[in-house]
Image (cartoon, rainbow, N blue to C red; front, side, top):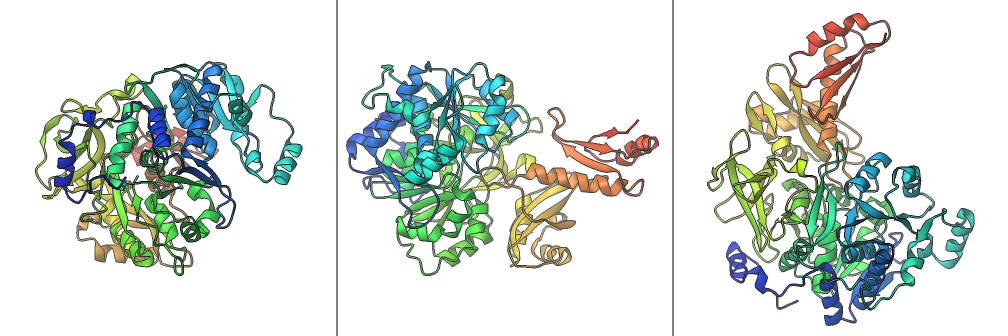
Length: 633
């Protein structure tokens, strides 16, 4: 892919876009995309897999024609089981070769629905129902895993499933270990199909359905919007995913000989698109780094050895991954194969970027995207000027605009240079709306621009800077405080591994800023010392946090992003608990999500204190977050 244009400035992107995307001769579907690459690069490795994360372990590897054959067999197996275009197959899997077969084979036969394996059983059932899935692919019983137990507990609630198909990880082990596990476990549960046996019985050279996939056909559903409340599914068309891979590769410039390491989960668009379809469109090799990816401590401890041994040229992560890798010595390893690494999914503190680059010598690029945009919308140009703290320039064919909205979210005007507004996107990579029509109210502004909910500004050279997420803003007496400002200051403290700022309820100001701190292993710092450091490095007086709370670990989503709802709930709990402590030291407060109010405090009174119910309501009346009092009778 060396004939790809080089992007250095906004002008280079405009030059690329002078040729309409419709004239780029892109494949109509993800299946055709992989077909084309298999024809162009028949000898190139496409997909490789490490089971344990050890530097010297054997590697499972497929060339592009072999990968295409597995995908075709999988599509044919699903078709034989009754899957048709417009119907879905759900998958509940770790990062395995069979996960890729399921994703692209599922898209060739129907629609693939990705489910986070870390969700609880009831939420998994909701996603299967919401996606109207007819098939489910999951993991066979295997030591140290609980996926089958979750599915088994749900089987009676899923009568619409025509089949449950299990991937047996024992098949990935050496013969002796495989046989021992299977002997101990016994046969697969009744009525459950073996994935490998199922696809082996199907042809690998053509789609038995004879389907001609169109660019507008829905390819996938990806769950977005957190892990609480009713499911919110974002449908992607084949055209969305192909356009995303093409646009992304104009930035990454993957080609034969490149190796992209995948450590992010394959139920998330970053793992599927950045270190998946984008690599496939360029003819690069995808290295699946263990079923658990970055959650595998063995992989992390040997990370730089694996980069060296497999000559990895690119990997993608989130800020918490880079913070963890800072603790792993990289000295003495040959990292010359690495072109750069990409950070997305959450803003990367500038100080963390500086520390990482100084330690490793590696160039770290920040990008930005979201599920509704199929994956990426912006990135710093690898060949151009990189502005740490910025999410870079819009990717080719991805339109990005900063719009000023009123208090009701209605469009007022375009933002001026460096004026903060709502970041909105549109173009060939942007979805057409959530699967559930009820979720689409207010998501479009100024016509067909999708309102991401993020706030940002564009500088005079076209670089885009996030200034926070509208729902993450701390609003102190009508004054908007960007939590990133607080987090950046705390990351400059040598003992701080991660910092996350949220608002705590206050009777007078509405909210006051507080910060949660996770210290580096072996480091020490008092809360008073951290507050003093914050005061010295935050120039906006209103943004100086009122509390610095040390916790063992910042809560994370399954992708590794900071999960701020959990911190906001904890801050409410602490404030309410303190306000009620003098009434009775045994009063217990918990804060839960509520579909109507967003968050609700539940106050549990101890036995014999029902008479305090009225006093509790009076004591908490000045706070914005509502409460329910539970008094024992």
